Amino acid sequence: MLRIFLAALILGCATNARAFFYDGNKLVADLRQFEKAERSDPATEYQASASYVGFVLGVHDTISSSLCSSGNVSTRQVTTVVGKHLNEHPADWGKPAHQLVAKALRDAFPCRKK
Image (tube, rainbow, N blue to C red; front, side, top):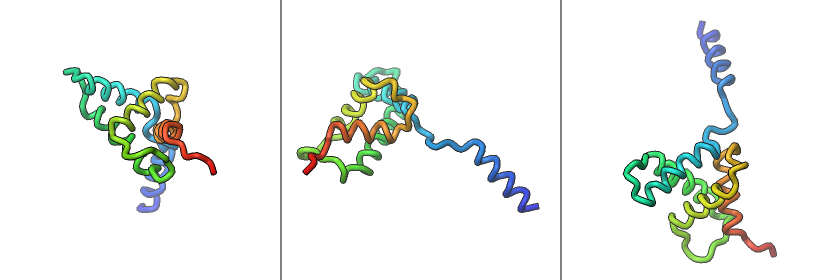
């Protein structure tokens, strides 16, 4: 009985699995809330705004050793760089969010090849 339950559980989970859970479309929706928060819009969904900031900073912190920036980069700089990239590349919004953030940051803070 336990084997049947485990097999059903595994099959049920496998059919709903995705390669990524947070895509560019969701990231842009959260970016819009971040932009509202920056304007002090009373209709801001602050949880979505915080999700945008947290996700972007999480990716930044994960790949920061591969980025080359001059001096300290602020949270505002990082979130603005990513927001600008997203707004300029709407065709990419269907891609995984982490890929979009990483590309934006690597484009903005490239390391010179030796």
